[in-house]
Length: 394
Image (cartoon, rainbow, N blue to C red; front, side):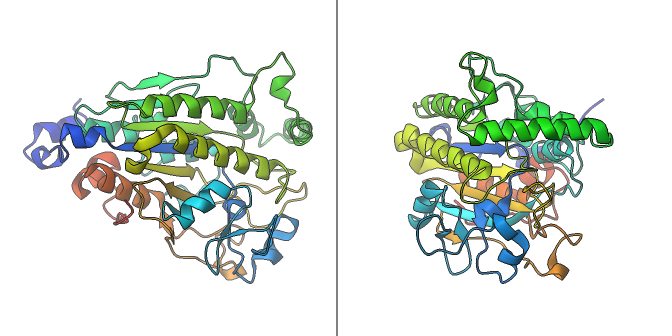
């Protein structure tokens, strides 16, 4: 049976959809890196809306104080600040190399990690609605461009008709956050098993908060943040060379903060610090390639506004996203803020989405590789003609 792309390739309309807009040399100098934060990052911790009068009331002891000194939000403008662990991103914002998006979501409105991640990666309009990923489909439009997946496996977003390169850490790890997420979904309807898993997770978090890692108990095996450092080093080495891959993916898990989340210190602060340091190392490793690089950082969905009974937050809807790089026209907050009054919350509990993540991704792919609107709406993100791309990002 002929699939959508084969049909378009066989039709006259495909001539305009599949034109190659950049010369091979111009394309080889570009770099686009998609960083996937698995587990649903709490956007209210990463990007602090300290100017909203309802923020501190809703967040309670997870609130980050307004900019005033050490251990307070890093001021972006008169309304938003970054978590104090995100010092490198703050520097990039001041250097016009970072755009922040405050209320981003995919088309997904339920709260399963794996359905949400799959939709975010397949780029369609429903989980598992596409068998390949939007980055692989982008590579299909870019001629001889190369893709690189850095992680323990090739993620859905990179799977498809174009074969991509891959690199994974050589040290075997103990069960990672992905395993715990799957168990959480599996046990969600079983109170006994769910409580046992929650007890295990609390013990794991307490160990990590005390400067140790369960993943290191068995002879020096690396935890998620340590593995991320290894992945960043590998990615930057491969992307920095002339003729290296143009598109790459990186992954960082550990964002499912149902308990002991913390504010300026604790588990969330450690996660954000690891992300910050990894992205800084990536910039350093890219060298001169940084000036032609754009990096998008996204998660599958956000978390609840209110703190739960174990000092964490539960699965939510909108979260923050980031676009960084030397190619970025930064120093801006892009997107509408929905507000945090009760009437403004999604289903009375979550940050309301005001921006489709595909609008960001379309804008970056168009600006970075000159993919046109027809390609983006019909092939890369099928069925997304109603999602206008954000122009002028890069």
